[in-house]
Image (cartoon, rainbow, N blue to C red):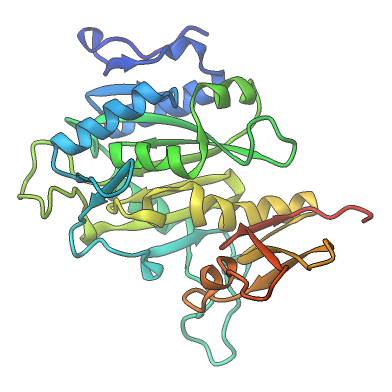
Amino acid sequence: MPPQLQSQSQGGPRILQGDVGILSAAVREFVEANVTLCQPDALHICDGSDGENRTILAQLEEQGMIKKLSKYQNCWLARTDPRDVARVESKTVIVTRDRRDTVPTPLGGGVSQLGRWMSPEEFDKATTQRFPGCMKGRTMYVIPYSMGPVGSPLSKIGVQLTDSPYVVASMRVMTRMGQTVLTALGTGDFVRCLHSVGCPLPLKKPLVNNWPCNPDLTLVAHIPERRQIISFGSGYGGNSLLGKKCFALRIASRIAKEEGWLAEHMLILGITNPAGEKKYLAAAFPSACGKTNLAMLRPTLPGWKVECVGDDIAWMKFDDQ
């Protein structure tokens, strides 16, 4: 089937970079459906190159979203809107038909402290309220990314659509992304990620710190059965970089359950004693309890060596050893 996306003069978004024709049928269908829904002015298929990254950073600097810090190489400061500064657990949901598939029901009733559930009907209503036309005046970036080394049998692939160039630059740091991922994906399956800052152009009110966001309508939703993540209204960290908590923990834990491995909120350390014997330590901590501090441990005992394998989320696949 030939690509349906056409140039803007033919009624579709301008193609700023990339060739829609090289996308697999599944990726192309995902992109086309959300172009129709979100109505961006332009489309950019990310290749992950150094040149692309320089262009994105220059664009962010010109827009006043980031500022170069001269003390360190390739170091940038981003000041967000004060209303968009953290993950929002109260607006983070998992969508399943049955509530008990998402969270346990407290004995005394009430709201579970272990997560938030949303019914498919509520989710459909929420997305209909938020996403139609949400990218007007903006560019939709297509980010193919790999969680883990590209081509590894342990890795998983996602494709994120976003209208935030900040997300593009950050996903290049957080994941392996670009053309090599599309090549590795081929016609395989992938996690579908859709993100918008929720600020179509022209703006209805001025931005704070040149940071587009829509805190009043922020929603981060996960649909495990569809391998899908939907995020709206926040440009910050784990709300917008959907390979982080959203994919690596919430969706991956469902995939892991089905495939017989574990995706857990854990750090992994490699510890080598003076005799050269190395052991690995995995530890589970809730948020804000010191996982990163422990993972970045610097030993003061002579001869001991500590290496950080991961400080937040661990994918563990066990063999006979």
